[in-house]
Image (cartoon, rainbow, N blue to C red; front, top):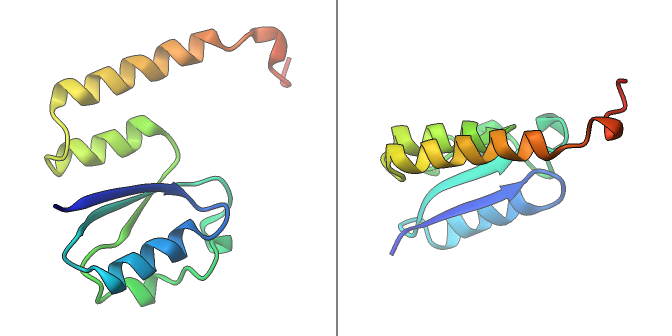
Length: 103
């Protein structure tokens, strides 16, 4: 089996992914990292350290963005991409406008 690791860059998840790649290089298909802080603040992350690992983390801001990459790489079907995008739109409309700080 090959695995897809989905995490965020808030603590040590990217470092954990790096350790997984080093220990099990044939078992990790992809790494998706949601950006919750500046990428430059990601614990122990250095793009140069990933050059020879065979898999590089894909940093994303939204799940539709990650799903688009996954669809391009044939990890999910187009129907799955569509479902994720529709769910994101539906979730957006569930946000109460009274909770928006910009108003």
